[in-house]
Length: 139
Image 1 (cartoon, helix red, strand yellow):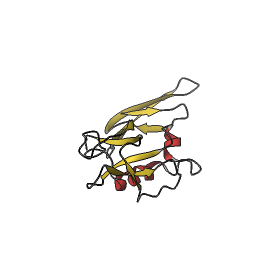
Image 2 (image 1 turned 90 degrees about the vertical axis):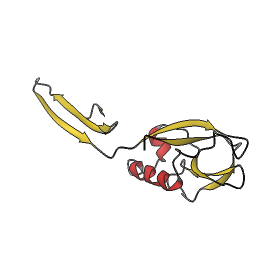
Image 3 (image 1 turned 180 degrees about the horizontal axis):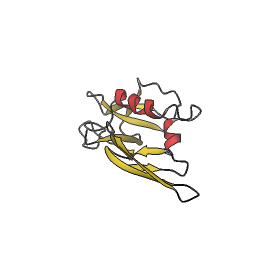
């Protein structure tokens, strides 16, 4: 449910509980239980593109909307304000497709997450552009 780095920084990996055990230089041990709730998982899929408005690979359904992308960005933006969220996560520095498609053609909205302060209104791009997309897992 969680990972801990060498400095003791704990990161939730899913909803649930984890027991964190630490041992100091003297061999003394202490443990505590930490419970996470409200964790929402996303999956990044790179190089998403399509050629027709009805294509099944269009980023819709489970892809994050522009509003959800803003919420995702809010979780990470303060870790290092000089870097974009994809840079912090070591992800591709590109626009990211949203799940907000433009129904009258083969375009969809993409957000420039490589910018440390993205415009979440997004930009309209044709489906032939290859961008990553973020998909919801089980929510």
